[in-house]
Figure 1 (tube, rainbow, N blue to C red):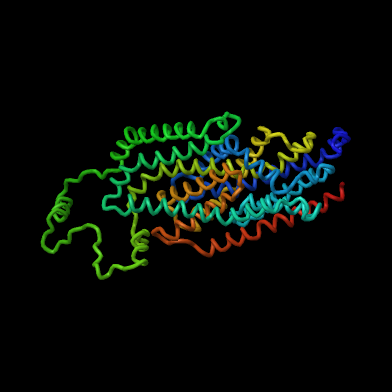
Figure 2 (cartoon, rainbow, N blue to C red):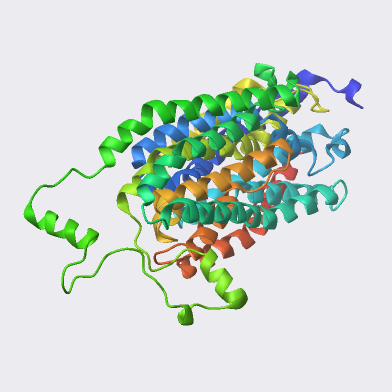
Length: 475
């Protein structure tokens, strides 16, 4: 029983495992920074909304904030819900070694995937590695299959939900701005509205059932709603009265006085002989499709249309915000996953065999530091895959992609469900890329990415099982 365990003897026997676990946790965080974090900012770099160095800086800041302010509930899910740790109450050393095996299996898989520039899910790898060690130790005993099934379902739902949100937002943006006769004016008109909804929703996700560290969890839902609406309104007012006038001046074409321009203006107002009055293309009624297919074609963007460059510039700042939003959501969800085994390892070594304590602040900081190092060293590999190779991304489509993925990730973190942010983002890239103008989706790259998703769980599980089989020899 727990009362009979000599903690000092236990710690002396397992100190080496703690040290190895800390090293493996750093490697896991390094691999996650090079892989998962690169997913979150890949579309921003691909659309040239930010440079790669700016992406690294923003990722480092907002991943840290997301992990520290929101990430507690997901850590608890990964630590305690996938496997019933009570079956190891009499053998805490075995559970401690299991966390080392989990870290080793997940870290190894992330490094392998990053070498091949494949964006994979840390969540998948961690669940697979956790199952790998416990299957070696206790077989199927203690596996919480209900939670496993929920997580597996979320892997399919996350790209579908994220892709649906991003596609709806892109179609809405297309109808309200991009396909208009004067898209720049429409974009400027709606810019405060975009900022209102983005900041208000983001603020609510942060405040509602938020960080115990800042006592956000003590706020009632209606207080969170009021604060979020106030933040959104202030942001919209700043955009309307301070930012928009400057953008209008910067993006408006300079007036021209030469004769050629005058002739063009005359041709616009009153076509000359042989001239053609420019304007929107009118499709004869006979050529319009009818029925359901015609309705769908009218709803979806025209893939042959070339977007107005000045209108797209309106979305650069907005995408910059959504990039930070996506980084925050990723930090809230996936960073917590990465440190869950280390949190359990530290708790067991300290004598908290029931793991009733919270996530230590220094463990969160350690995980964030490792992630930032991996991002700065190898992040460029996966950024190219997600941001440029899979589908062409513009600031408008990038804004929709990142907002949909971030919204899905933050909703999941509030529910304590460790979904894959990787799947969310790739699902949004594929969904928007399939309907937007341009070259669509590079399906061969997506096929390779999807295949890597399928083999991630068993791959990490097999590595973890192998490590656990070797560690059992030390028990």
